[in-house]
Each structure stands twice: as structure tokens, then as C-alpha cells.
Image (cartoon, rainbow, N blue to C red):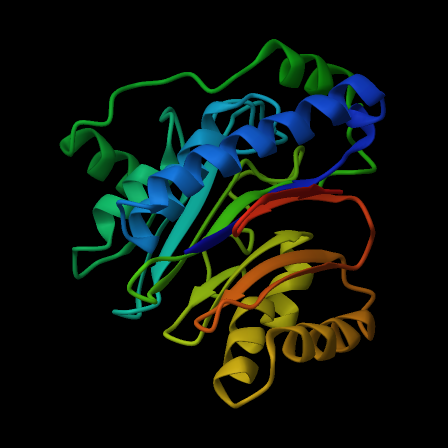
Length: 280
């Protein structure tokens, strides 16, 4: 039983050491709590649980604490993929909810499993997800001053391998900040979140680059075809470099290989196998 989580990339607003340390400590605590949860739950349940904890923490750009789009609204996206059943679900640009990953989890049992905007919100309300204002004072200050105009890359995610050898991936984002309203990132697509019975991947970075590279799906496909996770990831990042892409990934294989990579060394992540590791 293994898992690895990420909290996206450090941004300009994370330049002080206190904020960086707070993110590292939060990831450590969440990785430990999620690994304990994994002992008695499936990979899918654990991936959702870990991402919901990340969404609840205002240090990360997902759920509470998400970036604000150019029209002054917060819109959230999240997705979930069950490696065993190959079912993918997600919500795109949903407003006024707390945990988009929990709505994606609810959708995975339905025929129509990816919903956007008002359709996603109506589904959420019909299924008991109440109104929540995800704005934080920190994000409002950033929005007003446009402090994050240069560095706007942030997502959270979890991939997990459970005791039965099943894999799952979950990813959630608040967007890049100041984008055109309703811009769609990679996080609720198979380019940014993908799993099958061989491997699971969650991505962070510039959504357009990740979509252009089909990154998560490409890595998992290469593992399925016989590459190690490291080989598949490294090859995919070499191809991403050809378009000057900016991305980070975390992954696990069914054999228990854990690997992470990023095109810029600022992604913050934590993994839990037999012991906890936290790196940036």
C-alpha cells in the first residue's frame, strides 16, 4: 500500500520560507493521514480523501484557497479515475462548492460522468452539496494586486495503490488565476489525471502544456506497453521539452514503483511507502 501526493508548484507568493515550510508540513501531515486511511480503504476512496484534505487547506490552489479568475469569480475543477474499472469522472469550472473532488466521486457511478459549470453545480446541489464560498483574504489580495501574474501554476493530486493492487488518481485545481472565465485546464481531463491497472498519474503545471502533451495518458500507456514508470515519465518529459512545456507529475505502478518528475524544480510533494518522504 503506497501513495504519493502533490501540492503543485511554489509561486511568487510562496517566496518566503515560512510559507514554504508550512506547505511542506501540511503535505507531511496529509500524506501520513491518507496512508493511515489507505490501510482500511480502497485506492479510489483514499485518493479522494487525500485530495479533499488538500482542498480544505487554504495553502493550496484547490477548493478553499483557489485562484480567482479574471472576472473575479472562483471556479473549481477536479477529476477522479479508477484504474480497476477505467471509469473517469470530473467537474469543470464549478462554483460555490467546497470540495469538487467529492462531487467527482459522486459522478463516477453515473453514465454522464463529466459535468461543467451550471450543470455540475445543479448536480452538486441535488446531491446534498451545500453552498460554500471558497474565497480567502490571501487570494483576494493577490487578485487585487495581481501579484501572481508571472507564476500561476497550481494543482493538488493523489495517486494511490491499495492492498488489493488497485490504483486510482485524483486531481483538483483552482486554475491559474486571472484566466479568461471558464478556461478549461488539464485537471479534469485524462491529460492531467489518468489511471489503469498498470499505473496512475496526477499532473500539475501549465494546463495547456499538459493537454498538448497528453501527459498523464501518455505516461500510463507507456507503462502499460512495458516501460518502467521512470522510463515512461522521462521520455514523456523529453517530448514535453520540445514545446517548452511546464509540468510536474506524481505516479505509482501496480508493482509499487513510485516516481515523480518536474520540468522546473519547484513542485512540492510527499510520498508514503514504509516511511514518509517530503520533497520540493
